[in-house]
Amino acid sequence: MFYWISVQRMEDEASLWRAAHELLTLLEGTGRKKILIQIASEIDVVLDHTPYDLSTADRQAEMIVALREKHPGFLFSTSGGAQTETGRSMPSPALVEADYYVLIHGNGLRPAGAEAAIKAIRAMPAWQANPKPIVINEDSPAVPNLEAVWRNGASWGHYDQGFEGQADDPWLLDQPRPRWNTGPFEELNGFQTPPVNWTINSGFKKAFSSRVAETAGYLGETMQT
Image (cartoon, rainbow, N blue to C red; front, side):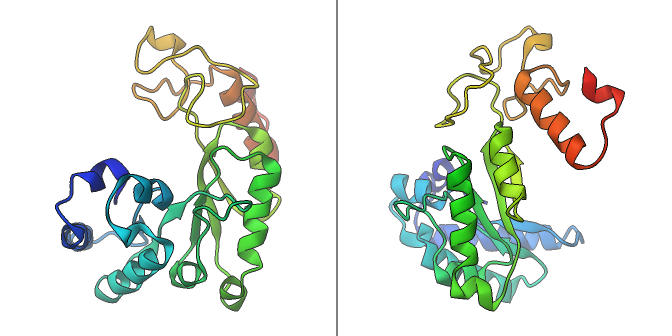
Protein backbone atom coordinates (compact mmCIF):
# COMPACT_ATOMS: atom_id res chain seq x y z
CA MET A 1 0.00 0.00 0.00
CA PHE A 2 2.72 2.50 0.89
CA TYR A 3 6.24 3.41 -0.15
CA TRP A 4 8.25 6.38 1.06
CA ILE A 5 7.45 8.53 -1.96
CA SER A 6 3.70 8.12 -1.47
CA VAL A 7 3.95 8.57 2.30
CA GLN A 8 5.74 11.90 1.80
CA ARG A 9 2.59 13.16 0.10
CA MET A 10 0.32 12.24 3.00
CA GLU A 11 -0.95 15.02 5.26
CA ASP A 12 -0.54 13.25 8.60
CA GLU A 13 -0.70 9.82 10.24
CA ALA A 14 -4.49 9.88 10.20
CA SER A 15 -4.42 10.11 6.40
CA LEU A 16 -2.36 6.91 6.26
CA TRP A 17 -4.94 5.06 8.33
CA ARG A 18 -7.76 6.50 6.23
CA ALA A 19 -6.05 5.50 2.98
CA ALA A 20 -5.50 1.96 4.25
CA HIS A 21 -9.13 1.50 5.30
CA GLU A 22 -10.45 2.95 2.05
CA LEU A 23 -8.24 0.74 -0.10
CA LEU A 24 -9.15 -2.40 1.84
CA THR A 25 -12.85 -1.50 1.62
CA LEU A 26 -12.44 -1.12 -2.14
CA LEU A 27 -10.76 -4.54 -2.37
CA GLU A 28 -13.50 -6.11 -0.26
CA GLY A 29 -16.00 -4.87 -2.81
CA THR A 30 -14.32 -6.88 -5.58
CA GLY A 31 -15.29 -10.17 -3.96
CA ARG A 32 -11.77 -11.48 -4.48
CA LYS A 33 -10.39 -13.92 -1.92
CA LYS A 34 -6.92 -14.73 -0.62
CA ILE A 35 -5.44 -11.30 -1.25
CA LEU A 36 -2.01 -10.73 0.28
CA ILE A 37 -1.54 -7.22 1.63
CA GLN A 38 1.89 -5.63 1.99
CA ILE A 39 1.23 -2.56 4.11
CA ALA A 40 4.53 -0.88 3.29
CA SER A 41 7.55 -1.63 1.17
CA GLU A 42 10.83 -1.40 3.09
CA ILE A 43 9.65 0.20 6.32
CA ASP A 44 13.23 1.14 7.18
CA VAL A 45 13.46 3.27 4.03
CA VAL A 46 10.01 4.77 4.68
CA LEU A 47 11.14 5.68 8.20
CA ASP A 48 14.30 7.33 6.84
CA HIS A 49 12.38 9.60 4.48
CA THR A 50 9.13 10.41 6.31
CA PRO A 51 8.16 11.99 9.65
CA TYR A 52 5.80 9.25 10.85
CA ASP A 53 6.82 6.55 13.33
CA LEU A 54 4.02 4.37 11.94
CA SER A 55 6.77 2.70 9.88
CA THR A 56 8.60 1.25 12.87
CA ALA A 57 8.29 -2.51 13.17
CA ASP A 58 6.20 -2.40 16.36
CA ARG A 59 3.81 0.22 14.97
CA GLN A 60 3.41 -1.82 11.79
CA ALA A 61 2.40 -4.69 14.06
CA GLU A 62 -0.13 -2.38 15.65
CA MET A 63 -1.47 -1.48 12.22
CA ILE A 64 -1.77 -5.10 11.14
CA VAL A 65 -3.75 -6.00 14.26
CA ALA A 66 -6.08 -3.04 13.79
CA LEU A 67 -6.62 -3.58 10.06
CA ARG A 68 -7.29 -7.30 10.30
CA GLU A 69 -9.96 -6.65 12.93
CA LYS A 70 -11.88 -4.41 10.51
CA HIS A 71 -10.87 -6.26 7.33
CA PRO A 72 -10.53 -9.92 8.33
CA GLY A 73 -10.54 -11.32 4.81
CA PHE A 74 -6.96 -10.34 3.96
CA LEU A 75 -3.52 -11.77 4.73
CA PHE A 76 -1.33 -8.97 6.11
CA SER A 77 2.38 -8.36 6.30
CA THR A 78 4.86 -5.54 5.72
CA SER A 79 8.43 -5.58 4.45
CA GLY A 80 11.81 -4.36 5.60
CA GLY A 81 15.37 -5.27 4.82
CA ALA A 82 17.27 -8.09 6.45
CA GLN A 83 20.48 -6.78 7.96
CA THR A 84 21.22 -9.18 10.81
CA GLU A 85 24.63 -7.65 11.58
CA THR A 86 23.16 -4.25 12.39
CA GLY A 87 19.59 -5.28 13.13
CA ARG A 88 18.35 -2.62 10.73
CA SER A 89 14.85 -3.35 9.45
CA MET A 90 14.66 -6.89 10.81
CA PRO A 91 11.11 -7.64 12.02
CA SER A 92 10.48 -7.23 15.73
CA PRO A 93 8.89 -9.99 17.83
CA ALA A 94 5.60 -8.07 17.81
CA LEU A 95 5.66 -7.83 14.03
CA VAL A 96 6.49 -11.50 13.56
CA GLU A 97 3.58 -12.35 15.84
CA ALA A 98 1.17 -10.08 13.95
CA ASP A 99 2.25 -11.08 10.44
CA TYR A 100 0.36 -13.72 8.49
CA TYR A 101 3.64 -14.30 6.66
CA VAL A 102 7.02 -12.74 7.43
CA LEU A 103 8.10 -10.48 4.59
CA ILE A 104 11.68 -9.24 4.16
CA HIS A 105 13.87 -7.92 1.35
CA GLY A 106 17.30 -9.26 0.45
CA ASN A 107 18.67 -6.29 -1.48
CA GLY A 108 22.40 -5.95 -1.05
CA LEU A 109 22.84 -9.32 0.65
CA ARG A 110 25.15 -12.14 -0.28
CA PRO A 111 23.91 -15.72 0.25
CA ALA A 112 25.29 -15.90 3.80
CA GLY A 113 23.39 -12.75 4.74
CA ALA A 114 20.11 -14.02 3.33
CA GLU A 115 20.55 -17.33 5.13
CA ALA A 116 21.38 -15.55 8.40
CA ALA A 117 18.21 -13.46 8.18
CA ILE A 118 16.01 -16.51 7.69
CA LYS A 119 17.68 -18.36 10.56
CA ALA A 120 17.39 -15.32 12.85
CA ILE A 121 13.64 -15.12 12.25
CA ARG A 122 13.19 -18.85 12.80
CA ALA A 123 15.09 -18.56 16.09
CA MET A 124 12.70 -15.94 17.46
CA PRO A 125 10.31 -17.26 20.14
CA ALA A 126 7.47 -15.39 18.41
CA TRP A 127 8.08 -17.37 15.21
CA GLN A 128 8.63 -20.69 17.00
CA ALA A 129 5.36 -20.25 18.88
CA ASN A 130 3.51 -19.88 15.58
CA PRO A 131 5.65 -20.83 12.54
CA LYS A 132 4.59 -19.09 9.35
CA PRO A 133 5.98 -18.62 5.82
CA ILE A 134 9.07 -16.47 5.39
CA VAL A 135 9.03 -14.63 2.06
CA ILE A 136 11.75 -12.55 0.44
CA ASN A 137 9.72 -10.85 -2.28
CA GLU A 138 12.53 -8.58 -3.46
CA ASP A 139 16.19 -9.51 -3.65
CA SER A 140 18.31 -9.36 -6.80
CA PRO A 141 18.80 -11.25 -10.07
CA ALA A 142 21.42 -13.44 -8.41
CA VAL A 143 20.93 -17.22 -8.53
CA PRO A 144 23.33 -17.76 -5.56
CA ASN A 145 20.88 -15.83 -3.37
CA LEU A 146 17.99 -17.90 -4.72
CA GLU A 147 19.89 -21.06 -3.79
CA ALA A 148 20.54 -19.90 -0.23
CA VAL A 149 16.94 -18.85 0.35
CA TRP A 150 14.99 -21.81 -1.01
CA ARG A 151 17.36 -24.29 0.59
CA ASN A 152 16.47 -22.67 3.90
CA GLY A 153 12.76 -23.11 3.30
CA ALA A 154 11.82 -19.57 2.29
CA SER A 155 10.42 -17.99 -0.87
CA TRP A 156 12.58 -15.73 -3.01
CA GLY A 157 11.82 -12.75 -5.24
CA HIS A 158 13.73 -12.26 -8.48
CA TYR A 159 14.39 -8.51 -8.74
CA ASP A 160 15.99 -7.40 -12.00
CA GLN A 161 15.71 -3.75 -12.94
CA GLY A 162 17.61 -4.37 -16.15
CA PHE A 163 20.27 -1.73 -15.71
CA GLU A 164 23.77 -1.70 -14.28
CA GLY A 165 24.22 -0.78 -10.64
CA GLN A 166 20.59 -1.40 -9.68
CA ALA A 167 20.05 -0.20 -6.14
CA ASP A 168 22.75 -1.71 -3.90
CA ASP A 169 22.84 -5.06 -5.70
CA PRO A 170 26.36 -6.49 -5.29
CA TRP A 171 25.94 -9.03 -8.09
CA LEU A 172 27.47 -7.97 -11.36
CA LEU A 173 28.07 -11.43 -12.80
CA ASP A 174 26.31 -10.34 -15.96
CA GLN A 175 26.44 -6.59 -16.38
CA PRO A 176 23.54 -5.45 -18.55
CA ARG A 177 23.97 -2.25 -20.46
CA PRO A 178 22.69 0.83 -18.56
CA ARG A 179 19.07 1.59 -19.31
CA TRP A 180 15.89 3.00 -17.91
CA ASN A 181 13.16 2.77 -20.52
CA THR A 182 15.09 3.41 -23.71
CA GLY A 183 15.21 1.04 -26.68
CA PRO A 184 15.47 -0.57 -29.05
CA PHE A 185 12.90 -2.90 -27.54
CA GLU A 186 14.63 -6.14 -28.51
CA GLU A 187 17.68 -5.11 -26.45
CA LEU A 188 15.78 -4.20 -23.27
CA ASN A 189 16.54 -6.47 -20.33
CA GLY A 190 15.29 -6.88 -16.79
CA PHE A 191 11.70 -7.39 -15.66
CA GLN A 192 10.94 -4.48 -13.31
CA THR A 193 11.58 -1.50 -15.60
CA PRO A 194 8.83 -0.73 -18.16
CA PRO A 195 8.61 -1.26 -21.02
CA VAL A 196 9.42 -4.91 -20.31
CA ASN A 197 10.83 -7.32 -22.86
CA TRP A 198 9.60 -10.64 -21.45
CA THR A 199 11.90 -12.77 -23.57
CA ILE A 200 14.82 -14.58 -21.91
CA ASN A 201 17.41 -12.28 -23.45
CA SER A 202 20.06 -11.65 -20.79
CA GLY A 203 22.47 -13.65 -18.68
CA PHE A 204 20.52 -12.91 -15.50
CA LYS A 205 17.23 -14.02 -17.08
CA LYS A 206 18.75 -17.19 -18.50
CA ALA A 207 20.43 -18.15 -15.23
CA PHE A 208 17.27 -17.60 -13.19
CA SER A 209 14.89 -19.32 -15.62
CA SER A 210 17.16 -22.30 -16.10
CA ARG A 211 17.68 -22.79 -12.35
CA VAL A 212 13.96 -22.61 -11.61
CA ALA A 213 13.24 -25.09 -14.41
CA GLU A 214 15.96 -27.40 -13.11
CA THR A 215 14.64 -27.18 -9.56
CA ALA A 216 11.15 -28.01 -10.82
CA GLY A 217 12.49 -30.98 -12.76
CA TYR A 218 11.94 -29.51 -16.21
CA LEU A 219 14.45 -28.42 -18.83
CA GLY A 220 12.65 -28.00 -22.13
CA GLU A 221 13.75 -26.49 -25.40
CA THR A 222 12.48 -23.06 -24.38
CA MET A 223 15.07 -22.90 -21.62
CA GLN A 224 17.90 -23.41 -24.04
CA THR A 225 17.26 -20.16 -25.94
